[in-house]
Length: 214
Image 1 (cartoon, rainbow, N blue to C red):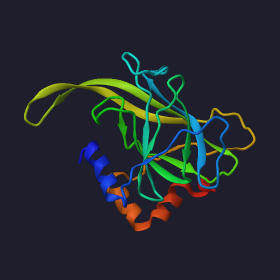
Image 2 (image 1 turned 90 degrees about the vertical axis):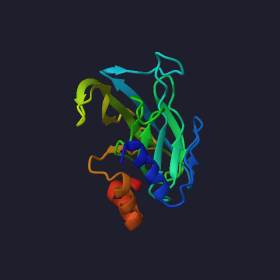
Image 3 (image 1 turned 135 degrees about the vertical axis):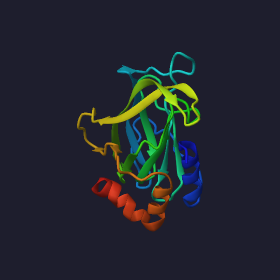
Image 4 (image 1 turned 45 degrees about the vertical axis):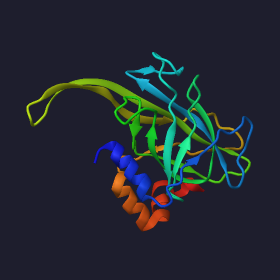
């Protein structure tokens, strides 16, 4: 199953499949009991170069949006694009555990799009406060390599391979809770994620987030 098919399969297989749009939080807005203000940054870093500031036209790269699956409801979640200037975000999100399903725009073959990066966001209830998710750096390395198919056809494959770094850049301050995103190399995706979620959604959320949801 290719990455795009896996992406669609999970959204269909998880219950409801109701697309949820999470709005930006206003400056100075704090969390309520039902919605949590999460902050942080997401940036492409390609061959050591930070791609911000972002823009709509080449050679600028578009600011990356993010999609995730809620382990509470099974619904796909859409998050707004980060700031063009520095990749900052400030979103309003329901508390819970989220598995990131994609980052970036374009089709699944676009070098700026990353499907199922095995990233987890743990969002606790935080009335009166905000939750800092860290600075996610999408560390990309360009590659070019010769490929020979079983048919004997040869071609040159080009693209970007990513690894993920999350750093804590925020100074300690009152009314801020720090819950940096996690990269979990052992995180199930695709049909394995569906099976785990259907078998024990709450248990999967506890396994991935544990005390981070408190």
